[in-house]
Length: 484
Image (tube, rainbow, N blue to C red; front, side, top):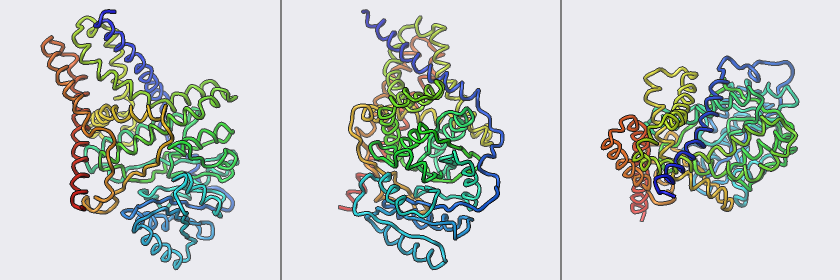
């Protein structure tokens, strides 16, 4: 086969596959409604349920005190509230937790710290350990960097007046959204998930997931679904699908938002996204057959498949990244109407998707023009490391649950010992930035002006993520030298 024909065929086939994901995003935007959702937020009659708030921690000295103070401020009857700190820490976090627990107990709050002999099962193991010792019929989970509003429990627990409801999830907000371009881009990416995806899946009666934090479980649901399991890196996603396959109903409460910290450093962000992507593929491997065989509507099966395999889009973006500059040479194919329509579907669907989430949150045009392109660039730049995560999820072992470092209220340099190691070759994305520089030069030479916006978007994403990765790697090296 002619080399140019092979390249063109592979490129267009990959673009068509990405176009399917683009069509799915367009469908979600078409179904999206942001009118007030009241389920789970209205006061109801009868006694409030007993709630155990579980706080899984591992070396969180920069945020532990802040978290405990926020949870202690929850507006909920003290006789109906228990606070469990599931502390697997090995550093000074232990002392901070002990001091705070003593202070809470002195205030008449039922608070206790539980520690295990080892970290078996990581977060899933800690949550299971706590559940066996919890008083509450409802279990509310917060990660270390979350700051729940005082009325969180009051507004969420009424969802469980319906005995068929097994889990209620709140929306994540972003306490440090405006810290940098990186944090704004991350916040925009997360908003697409929490504002559009969760809302549409809930409204349409489709499966959606507990996000590991800022949600409440019915204890009976966890038991009926087989309990917390740690054979994937996304124990929350795994349990969510098992529970819904068992017939439990989930409720999404987007009007209740819990602020949290998005990773301020690219290494921490890459680590977080690697775990999420690898874990979702592991859950697809684990539960894919059960979902296909389950006595549920076909539309639920299709959306579950789309959800669990969504990260396979990253290898497709990487393939397009390699092939796109080569395809520029093929004037007729590149400028064909079919190609242009597919590429516009892939690109414009992403713009529409994230812009919709930002408009729903009341963000102005100037903010959207700044943040949506940044989110797209970040997503493109992440395709190298995320492709690795997808392949590990498909073919590798479960792996270690690596927590995401939190900065909290500490100065930037105070979090230095919580820097995380970058996997792979630091700055590998810069090689693709050079590749796209060649593609841009080629496009200019052939007067392919219409291709330049797309090529520049890819160039920006790879150059940005590559530069941030090299900078993060150098900070880690400097920190190790300083401690040596």
